[in-house]
Amino acid sequence: MGAPTVINVDLGERSYDIVIGSGLLKQAHAYLNTCLKGKRVAIITDENVSTLHLKTLEDALGGWGLSLETIILPAGERQKSFDVLQNVLDRLLNAKFSRSDTLIAFGGGVIGDLTGFAASILKRGCGFIQIPTTLLAQVDSSVGGKTAINTPAGKNLVGAFYQPSLVLTDTDMLATLPNRQLKAGYAEILKYGLINDREFFDWLDEYGTKILAGDKVAQSHAIAKSCQAKAAIVREDEREQGVRALLNLGHTFGHALEAKGGYSDLLLHGEAISAGMLMAFEYGREIGICDGQDVDRLRAHLEKLKMPVLNTLDVDIISDPDHLFDFMMQDKKNMDTNMTLILAREIGESYIEPNADQTSVKEFLRRACARTGK
Ligand code: GLY
Image 1 (cartoon, rainbow, N blue to C red):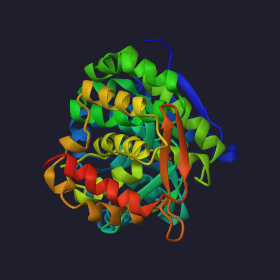
Image 2 (image 1 turned 30 degrees about the vertical axis):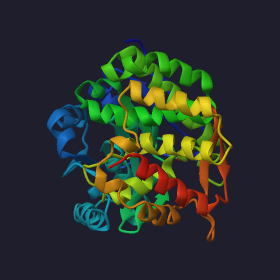
Image 3 (image 1 turned 30 degrees about the horizontal axis):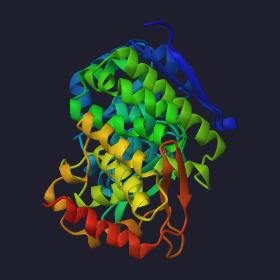
């Protein structure tokens, strides 16, 4: 592969680069160097990533006079909790981390969200770098500064906007990623086509199989395209006062599915988003705002790639549609008692509905869950 692709997230004094390429982890120090202000660096990672890649990163950062602290957490969404956050902060404070020191999120979306939130509150904000290792983190969660933990009331309900000073994306990480994780990340790639880029959806319809089969050229193109799309939206609306909410297409449905699954291994975030985006399109058809042919096209695309949809999910997740509705009412995008949904008129044309009709959403959920016949 050639020179890395560099995409700038232009946010004034909070601007940073996303560097995407092959073999970057081995050269991490060269890329991170200018972002490291203090001598202390914490690598926060999970057990899966540490087994496969931690030594490469530690070797790359060793020998430069840095004091390295490594925190290895179990894998999984349940780590995004108050307890784990407190534990991580205690360890960093015991190790005397200061504002000028740096936390590196070395993992997928869970590690990125948790580490970013810890960085945002440690002494009111310390250095923060993202080295995303999953497809989902590389195309979405490592970019844009959203950080959070989950609570029993719902997903990502406690958090902060806190931008990293660099996103270092080594595409070689994907070679060891289980197919289930690749599919979870693919859902977020597909999202960019669905929200405002029909041509990209057409490309994905042709090359999606290759991305999931591990084709490096197709993967790199999809990652760069996704990061460009996200950087443009974040530049326009860093704190989600408007257009950034489009990046949540299908997420209100998806987050409810995840919450119902107890953030367990039953359902990964990206799997919930795959099912949730189709639900948003199908709900749109039901209320007469979404082109029916495009709904069928999206379903066919997801089924061709064996992506999760409502009727492939575990029965416990879809057995109580009213409970799903309650979780949807807790969504962060909701204002007062209104429910905000991101819907689409067609593939590539999404919009924000700030006051969705709650009765029809509830009825849709009941019908959609019953249709699965589980
Ligand atoms: N993942 C949606 C966003 O970053 O806004």
